Each structure stands twice: as C-alpha cells, then as structure tokens.
Amino acid sequence: MNASQKNLVTLLAATVVAGGLGLYAYFGVMKPEEEEVQRKQAEATLFPVNAPEAGGTDGGAPPALRFTWVSVELPHSKTEMELQEGVWRVTSPVSALAEKTQVDNLIGELAAAKFKATIEENPTDADLERYGLKPPRATVTARAYVPDAQGGGKDDPSRQHSVTFYLGIENRFDGTAYLRREGDPRVYSAGGALRFALQKTTAEWRDRQVFPLEESSLLRIEVKASRNAFTLERATTDKPWQLTQPLALRAAPQRVARMVSDLRFRRILSFPRPEEGEEKARKAMEQPLVDATFVPKIGTPLRLRLAEVPLAGAKQTFAMTEWGSEVMLGVVDRGTINDLDVPPLDFKDKKVLAVQARDVRGLIVHPAAGGETLTLVKVPDTQRWEVEAPLHGLAREFKVASLLNSLEKLEAAAITEANPKNWARYGISDTSRGVSLMDGGGQLIARLRIGNPVKGNPQRVWARGSSEDVLELDKSALDALPLTLTDLLDAGPAANSAP
Image (cartoon, rainbow, N blue to C red; front, side, top):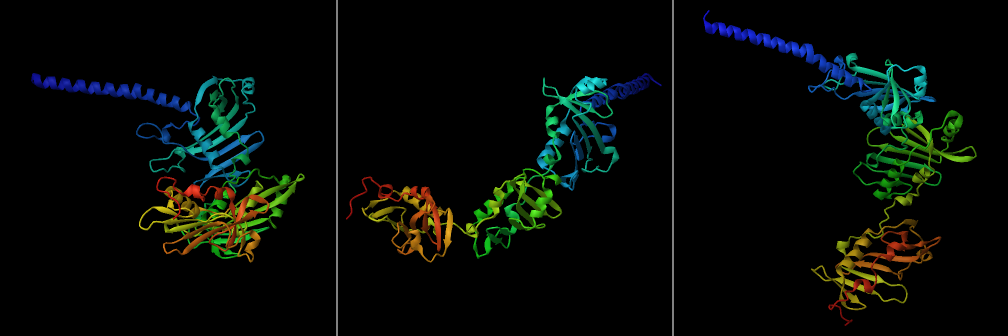
C-alpha cells in the first residue's frame, strides 16, 4: 500500500468515526432533548396529544383535535353531548339538538386551553377545598381523536384521547380559574374563558331556534289560526309565491319572506319541566291557536303549533316544533302567534299602481276641492318635461323623476277591503284628489285616488290604485310626494306665464 492509499483509508476511517459521533449526538442527546420539550409542551396543554402514538405533521405539530363527546357536570346539572353525523346533540338527560354556537365555543376553548401556571405540586385536602376543587365546581370529560392524513382515525385507539378535569373557583386577582386533571395531583391555573364556556345547564346547551328553515327552501306554507287561515304555494323555489286559499292571487314575495324571517328570529325562552306544566302544554297542542305546516323542497315537512296555557295565574305561550324525529316544546314570546295569524289579504301585493316610470309620458295632479289641476307632459324624443297648466313652463326634471319613481314604488300599509260595493263610504270617487298617469297617446295607464282618513288611525288615508281594493296609505308617504306647482315648475328664466 503506497502513501496515497494510506491517506485515503485514514480519511474514510475518520469520516466514519465523525458520522458515528454525529448520530450519537443526535439520537443520544439532541433527540431526547426534543422529546422532552414536546413532553413539557404537551403537559402545558389541557389535552396532551403529542404522545408518540398520536403522530404529527411534517413540521412536528399534531393535526387539530376533533372532539366527539363531552360531558359537563355542575353541582345541580349534568349534560352529555355527542357529535352525530356532523351535528352536535344533547344525549342526556334529554335528546335534543345542541346550540351550535355554545358547543363550538366550548370545543374551541378545550382545544386551545393551556395551563398558565402550576399552583400546587402536591395539594392537601385543605388546599383543594381552598381552590374550590373539593368538591369541584364542574367536572368535565371530553373525548377527541387526532385525524390521520386522510381525516380518519376516529376508531383508531392510538389516535383517541380522553381527558377528565375538575374546575375550581375563580382567582379574582387575575381572572384565571383553578383546575386539576384526573390522574395528575397538581393544581393549575387556566384562562377564565374556559370557565365561562362550560358553566351552563342542560337547558342552556340546547338549541332554542323555534323555526330553522329558510324561506328560499320552501314550496308550501299552510296555516290554520284562530282568526285566519291561508295556504301559500309555488311550483319551484325560483317561482313566485301564490296565495291559493282562501282566494287565489299572486302573493307579495317580500311579505312571505318577512313572515318566515320573523319566525327564524324566535327563540325558546324556557323549557318546561314535567312539574312546571309540560303535560298541560302538550295537552293544549291538541287544540292549538296556530297549526302551521311548512313543506321544504328537500326533506320532511315541519309542523309548528302554538298554544296558550295558564300557569301560575298567568297565560304563557308555548310552541311545539316537530321536524322528522325532532320534537321541541318551550315557552315563546306572545308575538310568535301574530307572526302566523295573518289576514290572507296581507299577502296580496300592496303595490299601489301597476305602472313603470319609464312608460309615463304625461301626468295630471288632481287637487282637493277648490284647487287648480296641474298638468305635465314629456317633450317627445327628449328627457324634458313641461308644465302645461295652470302655467306654462319647463318642469324640474329631477322632481318629476322623483315623483314618478315614488309612485312606481308606492306600497299600501294595509288592505281594508277587496272589491268593495260602495267606494263612497271611504271618500273615494272619480273626482277624488290624486294623480293620473298617461302614456304617449294620452291614454290613462294608472290613477291614484285618495279618500278619507282611516277611522281610528288618522295617520293613514284610504285610497284606490290599480287594483279593486281599498288601500290604506301612510299620510307621511303622500306628504313626501312633490305634487304642487311650486315643487314641479322650474322658476328659472325658461318659465313663463300661461299662453
């Protein structure tokens, strides 16, 4: 072996020794140190998930926990909740949908909860009493799993985790809460948000939405109430609503949407206990004040019944929602009845004039008795308007445009009567004050006639528009219309006296 070969062998040997030392340094020193850091980080969290069997991402951090079951036990209430088919449900002591916002808040706090400090390493019974941990203010057990790369692992024991912890009193100095984990003797402090998130009774964990459907999902609404009954239908969800009972007419879409929206905002105020009138409430549902059925495009119909029950010397309004296998009974606001006990005519389109502003080429303002008629015409092939009577001159174009747009959008506040036999009783005749709208050939296309003030409501007046209905209009809406010569005549140099 020559000198060059000896040098090469020596270099290779040194490389092998150096590599061995490097591996020893990593696996013998650095690797245990990394594992110890991860172990301490896991100990600092409420849910220790960095155990070897939990796995982790390429960056070392484990995937987010997916919770499947939670039990919250307070001194006088214990509630168990489970994630079933992607929806959280209360499973004990009752079977009901859970309030999603409340559960999501709790799950978020459980996943993020960390110990701020170790208060006692080996507390005595006296210490535990002092921290409110003997007995605890709350006992919580939660189950979760760490998903694999495909999101599975729910049934893999190596990925499942369960933690039970006990909550004590609040540290009024910094707002933290004292906490102890099962199997760990130490007393910790944790953020106060966790304490607020879990201190709720079973009733507070339950979903309280009386009506969960969207108007856009419905095809049929049938209501039988103490004063009114009606049926609304449409062929598909993109078609307009039709009132089919007790009379047939096209329904105002915004009125149907408002009724459903009002229902969606209703919440159960309280859930009755058997000894607090639950049986009475269920009995009252056999003859309810309101019995409504809602048929969605997809899924089963929803039935909503409302009844009043005398309890403790006062009437309380109860709602019972039945949707598939879900049944919910609770006290609601009295206004929920008014949401559905609606006169059928309320659904009639309340647009006063069947006209589009762009089609109008002339208008006449009919005054009250003794006033002068005001006539305006649009100059052909222009956007200009002229006043023809009682003076001649250019009109204020923006005022005319405002008037026409307001008349096109004008809606009645209510419908008093359909097809009345006697319009005169409402102060409405062919000579009533109002506005006439004409097309380019001078033909009448719409007319508004204004009658007497509504009896019992002087802020409204009766009126007649394009339909054969007695309408109620708000005086404030009429007063805002520019209907006088002063409003409409341009007082500039172009204005001149009558010819």
